[in-house]
Length: 435
Image (cartoon, rainbow, N blue to C red; front, side, top):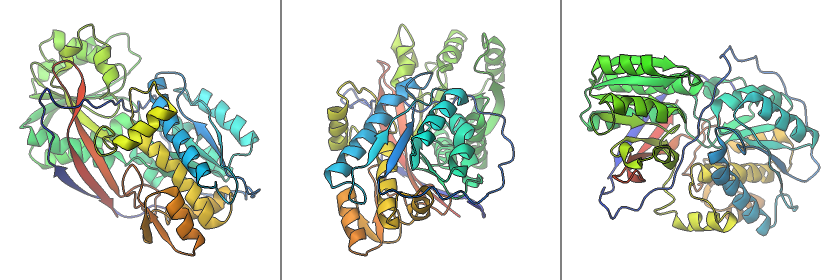
């Protein structure tokens, strides 16, 4: 896709939930963006080959079953599994049951590429995944140049907005342009006048740094230090020392599972959540972070952001349906986005009258905007078959995809660890992105 124009971000703060003992904890972990390849200029767009249509929509999964991202696998797989169940119970796609071929993304390009090769050989029409922006960047060219749809439920790196993807890459997760602005607003609202950043060295980390730092400084905040670190380092002593020496009011950690090591160093240096305003983002604001400590309460008071919806609130029915799919679920991050990715592709196939990847890609944006509102696969499919244009509003939100294949409307949850080290939702920010 060719992208032009500047991004405008609008945010509206929704009334925060009370942080008392009566708050229902949110069961969530966020996608971890692992080591991305060195970013290079995206390849020029070429016409993808026609992949053909046999009347059966086959979707392949590149979601984390193994590696540092494995905790994300259960909610994402459950979301897709539930969507496939709902679609097939409604009569399938093009009169046939949809086929779902799950596969592992791991947390590196080697595993993901092996999965993509296998699924291409099995003639899938589209892929759901990966969770990590870095992993998706290792397979996006292979997928889109084969004329297949590449649809991620969790990629947030702004890199994808301008990527030359032949019009075949899409995501239900919003760009970090929105999350970054939301994080900045929260820090300003909390009265955190100065901050230091500790940032994972990959496309996700540096991108989110850029899109939170700018809005924060524009509102009068001051960044005293920004440290880009190697997550594979033996220790983070130097990074901790530099952060403490800066003496900021708050610390922002944009990382993933190594966050527990960084927090340990900060706590031992008197710079933990009990001493300073400490913030996280979607890569580390999960219950797994507190579980990494012998005393989970040490993270109490840490706040942060997570793109998504609260399945413990208005979407309790959706949560219950997920638990019927996988009764062992304890986290629900990106389950709604995974569900919607499958439904949107199925609706696009119905609109195209074909399971060909290129034909599906040409319809995806339009089934999320501009037509008759509908909220379930069955309802939307019936409208399509009646000759109407549709506007699917998903479980994850209204979607309203831009031409770039990403949502213009997004919900960013404000999360906080309570005194027991359990996350709860302390409100949300409704964001919009327009050209």
